[in-house]
Image (cartoon, rainbow, N blue to C red; front, side, top):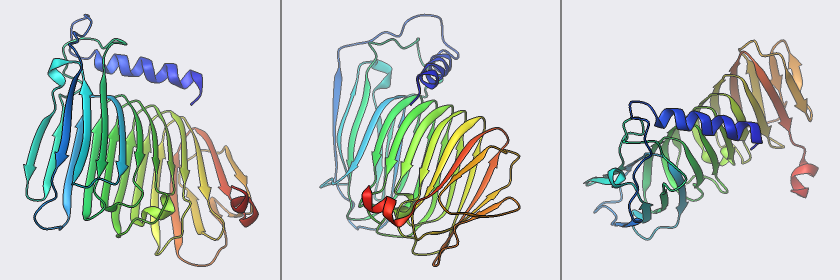
Length: 290
């Protein structure tokens, strides 16, 4: 992430944390650790997981022996996580980041390290304030994925095919930095990406098993869209952004860019007024060397 963007994110994060609170430093306590070992439901039917964090750092990985395992470490008393459970529903929630009791300092800690089960279908929703996120979703069975964040830095990846068809993948963020990789493996039907000013990479590496549609909407941003060799992609510029650069082989007709490949089609609708867009169509030799 470029240094100027870091300062923008920090400024926005501090201003959001400062909403509706007095101009005082947030009081901290000794670090508190909550261990999470949520058992699998009695039946392995689709289960909804909801994570709502105030802000901080969030690491998410596959490989849990139970439904959800891991720890939450925090040192603001009001940030004690709340848990809601039912047969096929599990939620972890912290206080709303816009309704807190002071301005956070460097001493504030809020660190989530969680792992999820790969044994059952999951409808996963993540919401949070300003945060630094690393989401490895490889090997999970995701039927839906919804991520909503404030000013954040996010790395999200799929390194292998999602085991079930995903109905929708939704990613919404404020002024941020994000790299979403292996999206071709996500196996989604539709995807929506909405972002404020920032630097973003959408890497669709992975083989499509069916046609898929993506809607991208952003303000003043730098967006790189990577299409792997062999993927049939159609990218339609529905906005007024004119600074679109291409790498690799593309067929341009009016405001539509086509990779002219065989197989299922990824159709991407781009809605930007101002910013920079780079369309990369990798060739087979480039991918072999990576």
